[in-house]
Length: 92
Picture 1 (cartoon, helix red, strand yellow):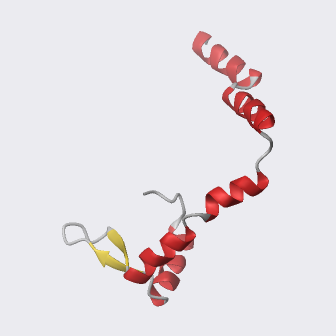
Picture 2: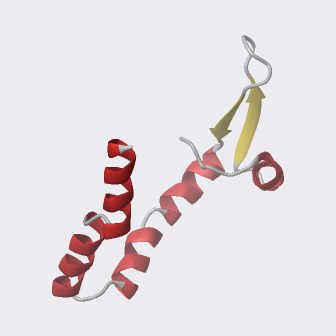
């Protein structure tokens, strides 16, 4: 799973989680540049405790269903400037 974080952000975070006993880091034998992250028993327990947090957060801040439908529609509609730029690039 990609987290889209740079090494300067990710490495200290992983070190803290490893020190807390939530994960282990293991270099791959076939490519020592790559590191596998493995959750410990404590890490898996924490993941299960945290699993309901994102849906609960969304429920706490979600707009009413009619506004949600409107928002989804707006997000799926490409902005006019993007559409115009794509047309100009195709024509040029």
